[in-house]
Image (cartoon, rainbow, N blue to C red; front, side, top):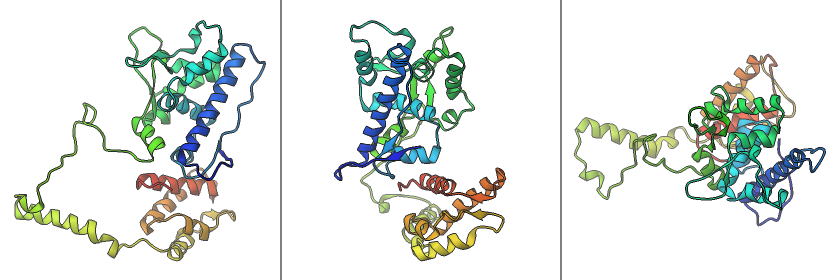
Length: 311
């Protein structure tokens, strides 16, 4: 989906977020100009990134959203990154003021800028086209991957109000990951009724049954010394695993360079086998029996996400 653009060398992952926001700004502005009859048509711009390894692009590679799905994610993410994002766009398109009820949107309890609703996503992506509006509404059904992975959802509304008038909510952990590159400990709440406990006491101060203490020491030993027994294979070793582990029923695309894959992705032998297992099941399920580079990369990124790594 995304392309890559040149940018000054001092840039970092924040540049990709800026590029994604600029893409969304052009997308929203272009579609709204058509909706308001300021333009006859609009061709969505390509999405370009500076680097390949930022969290926002890893999200795209691992989830493979359509353009409209990614736009919906960015519509929800924009106020977290740039407050007043939608107010600024509407201000330029409606310089003399006035309201645009079709645009939806609400204001929060502690701030005055527009927060998008389901109706906002519908109006931007579908205008008044009922068929397209229904397609956008399907993004927020329980069987869509947004809901299954708890990435995007609508805030419940009062009885009798349109479902799509609910505020567009995005997973706070996803916001934290794409902005900071990490996900912190969850806060104590009704949804997560547990919290980390810290102490200045030492292990010697802990009074436990000897068998329980022995089990804890076993876990400590595993953490401290496991890599000495199951160490990370070197690139040459990873290359041999990649070359020899696929069953003969799966055809490997000639575009896949196993040496390059082995050098680029640091995975344990178990991690490589997880990737291979996933790829084999996928190609057998869709009856292609051929592994292409995109599917392999998606499987590797999936494994990285499982292990909490960033490429």
